[in-house]
Length: 270
Image 1 (spheres, helix red, strand yellow):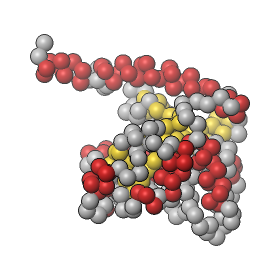
Image 2 (image 1 turned 45 degrees about the horizontal axis):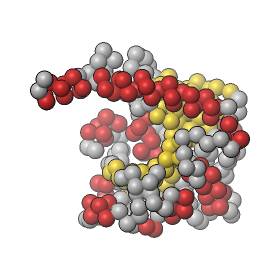
Image 3 (image 1 turned 90 degrees about the vertical axis):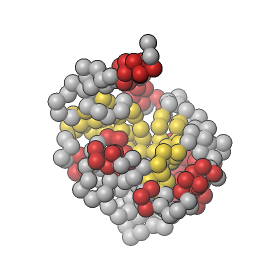
């Protein structure tokens, strides 16, 4: 069988819309992720048992929300200041046979159904119930489950963006509080650190880099997503190639969604 024929077998979509190799991978991965999610739901990590986890960190305004939105194909709370005020566990489940996406939130021993049109509002309301009104943060996690066609089978934990200077309404020790949450999640050797970096800043100055290097000096479990590449000054390729900050799992450079641009259109530029 020639190379072209072999490639077509791998890449030809199945009845569900996925290529066979992807469909097979999803069939193997989904049960494992479900097991990990069930264990996490039982809060066994509080007993000192660590679970494999992808932890998303980044300085404030690094474009972290845009990366997560692109993966999930939904809108997350945005605005000035800290948008993520509690650890947000995002469970993405590919469901090719679903006609309409199914979304729900899990927190405070309850399940709250929502939809794509109201997910931002639902997350804000849940966050206020957990962390209170205002700009404070909480260690108590909020879980978002997204079942829809086309999303990767993936579970990630999004943490509050790092800010050094408290603004009006934030506690004076906001930096220490955020640092404590981040270090708690990225310190275990089972954690993969997804470090979101803006292409417009010098990577060594990023607080998220400093924190990840504290627990993963060699970078063997750190992956970088570089956002805003369309706004980057010249020399981005050289900066990524040089890898002065030891990103052992490599770099993924992306362009953020612009204005009312759809997710599919934004992906076509990446």
